[in-house]
Length: 257
Length: 261
Image (cartoon, rainbow over all chains, first blue to last red; front, side):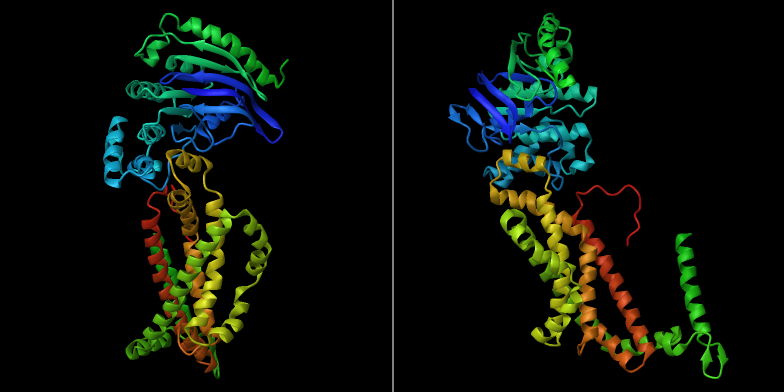
């Protein structure tokens, strides 16, 4: 269980998110949508323990989050691979940092590189890989730790549409095996619905709060491309979009209420 | 094409030099004064003598030893101090003005102090090289640690790194890349420290050979010393480039061929 209870984030005098409360049961895939700059990333950083709430509390697995949350894997929006390590060394880093013997970590990392389709690229440095391949390595790097909670901050936003669909599908496949709790931040509503069990809608910042909580009851296992044509998809889309549209307009004009 | 032109320029200079110093324009007057410019053939002759007696190799090794020690010590202390100050907000602010002043000062003026402190043998030259290398490496290490990519830093933190692991896997490599970009400059400065130190006062080394020739009004000796120095510096430069290639294999190579300074 992941719980936020009245959590707020402030940067100096600026309130990014205000009084957020929600619970996520184990194994649920939750998408967080909202206009740009609404504090979606702040939310992830709260759960990750990279940021302390100004008010309220954050708990995962029944424990309050006070420091870097070791139950979390975090996939960042931009490249966060270590440029001086090969694909293999990047993936085995997590287990080694957590105390696994190098040889064992190596085997595990090789297994994961294979799982994301990069077995032949283990000795490449990040700059020798394409954008999509780098994302795959990043995904393996995070998932190899088998985190019970997976935080993803617009992980695929920099990819072209086709690669993106492939990566989304791959993520769903891996998630299906691991059943981690996922918080997936995106501003792409289609992506949010196609992937998730539930969509949380944040209002435009500053002081953004939770505005909507929508269940996505499309059947699983899903194909991300076909999900968009499933009956029910457009219903959900319209429901969330009607709420999101106002917020997008508000953030666009810079004023609300 | 390029190589051909380069060879042509070299040959032209040498020919003009050789011929010019042989063409008399009057009694004891030449187109190019051999008293100052010596003459390529004389320089080659002197080089042959030096190599035969083996005396020059000894001096080359002394100079290389001083430069190497100056570089290693300067780089080592530079990395450590850069690292520590980059991690300590308080001390970096406290020491900042002192470092700026020391860095602004032309370090060669320390030479007299180093001679008094360490005597006229190798140690004072090592100290001079150290004082030149330290600041370059220090600033780069400091910058490298300070400007470590926020994303990479947070990523590795989330993957489970503690402070020590963070230093080893992220901060040090980040600092090293900055230091490596200045490798050519700092090795060059270590050579400057050694040679200038010897030139100012020493009993051995390439700088001493040049200074001694100058004292004897022996232009041929000065030029031959410079020629040897050129060869040594080029060899060192090639070695540094090789080392650099090995150490930053992970870095994207620049798309075009860049001119190296």
